[in-house]
Image (tube, rainbow, N blue to C red; front, top):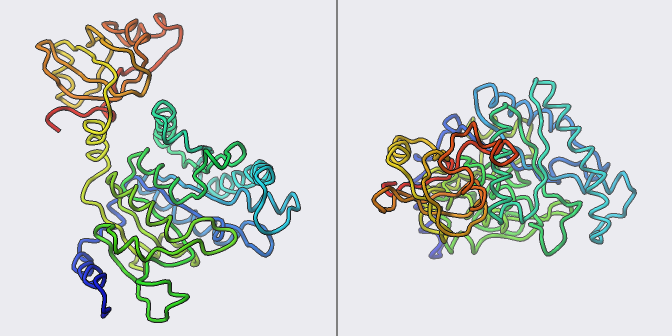
Length: 392
């Protein structure tokens, strides 16, 4: 590529990284974002069933291979406004919420029916900004997604537009998808778009714009070429996709932008179709543990016995029986310091109980939790996925 600008060096350098582009077959936990402009026929206000069926065919193939797949799907408002006969153009907040309430039913049923043809169970998950920002709600959502995938369900996720207001919403599903990917420790985020990747300039405005196949790192030169929203049904443009890429790659998740205006869009990526890969040098587990270890302010301390320390170092979760003393006041989801019998810090983690409940069950076996708390509760005081040891 020849461009007489400082950015060209970065784009040319990215071609050197093309050989390092990951193989789709290597990913095991994948988040796929589908926008309204792809899912809904804007002229008729109906789901593009033939296209969606081809996408689900791709998802079913991944599922059969053992992959865990989540879908962040737009379309509720676009469908609901048609059913309610609302006019085209921007909607008032209350009209958007009403359209979402009606459209979400149709959207969920459509996904469930098509996935059901492949004997895959769909699960509906509606999130707001707070569910991915507040740790207690974050852990609840993460746990739900994890359990759905353990049960081999495909979660269909959308922003809860029925109750979200301007102040507490994402407003676009690109960034929501990136947050879901980080929440679920996905190793790949796929943004299906109305464009087949990131170009050196908006291709609709510049006929000389060329596709950037690989972005090893999102720097200032990449952010500078991001455009604005592209259609009435899509509230996200290339700018939000780059922001999603920053969220995903910083958490150890690779991201790819590819066109959704083709049948079997995932298969097309697998076969080397045009797209842009955004690479990360980390992996989701390591990035999450780094976040726990260094980015969160601890709210308390759990003092462990020798057996618990040894179990943690073997890769186990922290069970209540291994906790001998608790210091501090904390809520569920807060970061806590873990210390061994000698007082040395063993690691840090996100605790599954608040300090009051943790004090009641410490030193007891998991089989006693229900009797002590009146509810079954979680088996682990700190799950191994929420734990960062000092040696990590």
